[in-house]
Length: 367
Ligand SMILES: *Cc1c(COP(=O)(O)O)cnc(C)c1O
Image 1 (spheres, rainbow, N blue to C red):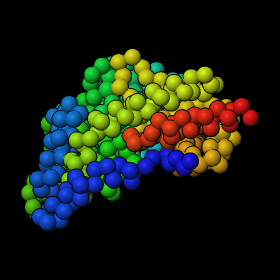
Image 2: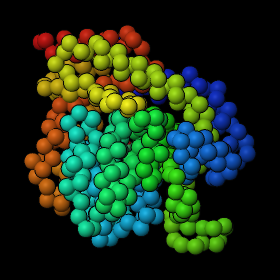
Image 3: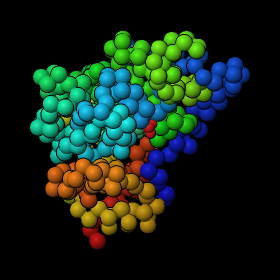
């Protein structure tokens, strides 16, 4: 059996008619930039998140950068985020001229540890960016309280968490602004790069929208310098067609995770937690184990693709040597780097595929 980590082709096959019609209609109208499909998708995605505004942008990294920049964050400021995330979260901070401050993660959810975040606050701190890593929301109640007490902006990196919830509130409605990526492999994926900013703040939404389109009010009338980071018509039409299926796909991811949990419960593996009141959307299904490398190698030999998200904590990367951290500074994140393994996870994964993955893992653990 050959089981990929994710299978984008199967998804396309299942909704080919919708996607092909969406693409054809955009090309037919030559509505490549802006236009009604972008507005329609933005409205639908804002509603999906339970927020007032959605501003489509070029990708998730730009979404983070544009929000930070338009909250007035820049040189001399500090922004706190998790040591264990994709580099984009930190890059967006550095791009504004601010300094990124890494903190360790919780030992069960993999998301930023609120106590560590609070300890890292200085006079220069302007914002905290929790990452809803793998699809499990960060501890937003605790973080909101800390942000309020210290007058900090709270910005969700929701690139892996479309539709995740805490006590019925969706990612995108839990902070000043949330940043989404629609990179093809994400839970809601475009057919190219795309991203969005979701917020309840009218003024921030307007500013971000202008910034992403050269700071313009209307053609050739520019109020300030911005950039070019627009969601294009083709991607918006594809995303709108796919958004209708997202709930169903999320339910299927959830069911797949439950089956994995059940089949792996009598092993030494640590399976993902789902905190009380939380809806985990399983962008990735990540387990922990000793001897991870050996198990991953055996899985590969037996046709099962897996991943490691992420193999090196950001502070240990060459890119962040200038911060002068030692591995001991982030004990939890660093230990997890050695033990985590992402198993195949996509809405179309079958029971027999999951059974095969789990029995192969069990064999590997016994030998
Ligand atoms: C994918 C991702 C991003 C960046 O999104 P792009 O659309 O690829 O720029 C940012 N943060 C996290 C946690 C991600 O997984």
